[in-house]
Image (cartoon, rainbow, N blue to C red):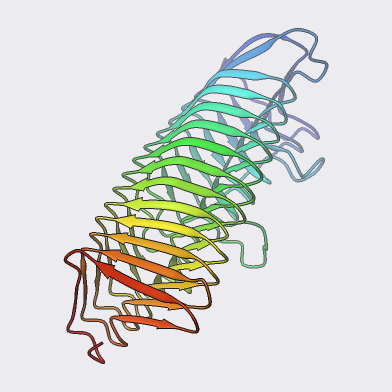
Length: 362
């Protein structure tokens, strides 16, 4: 408690080889590896830590640049609580639960200007709850879950203005869930003004995503690709995003309900590569290109969906075995046909579907 560990060649604070640790109100600046590291490398007896209200800044980047952070829980360690800490300008990450480690609660931390990812759960690690954190200015992702890792709940976080590394090719944006990882619930978060709002890829799943915003992101709101799934995406806003499309489903599956989706540059929603997507009780409006564009033997089902005032077609389907089924809802005010099926695709309507006021009139 109340210690200062600055400008060391390796870690500022290192807790290791089993035991119970409580760290509070410490400061660690300008250290070569991590500001605070808790590891259980030998895994001979349990190691548990509570890490609260510490300040770490400008650590890492000297030795082992691939894994160091402001605060690092790693190698079979466990943290009951990671709460109230501030991690600024650390390299490559801000706060990490890494390499076969776990945490119960990661809450109310402020993580700013990490060189790569801000809040990390990686390499077969797990966290019960990530809540109430503020993550901004990360070069890559604000919250990063990767390599067969899992999180039960990501709730009430502000994850904005991330993904600012202009020459990086790795996943950038607000939330990235990659590499056979799984998140059970994403609720009540803001993922706004990032390079990309959220990416789920490489066989990963977010079981329930609700009441969150994915707005004003530069390269799109949502990207789901490479055999991934969003089975319950409901009561969210995905508005005013740039890029080719606001929502992209590529070789993946999803269910969208009670959402408001728009774009400032591209299409509202694009579906590719034999994907399957169902949308209900939602509005797709004001995209400069098509409201919904479906390709490559994908299947789209719309129920009580309004597709309004888009710059291209309301619904475009293209390619053999591509199909769209529309039940109820409205397709109005679109500038390049309400419904456009081409190149062997099909669109069918049932119920009280209204297609009117589009240009041309079909």
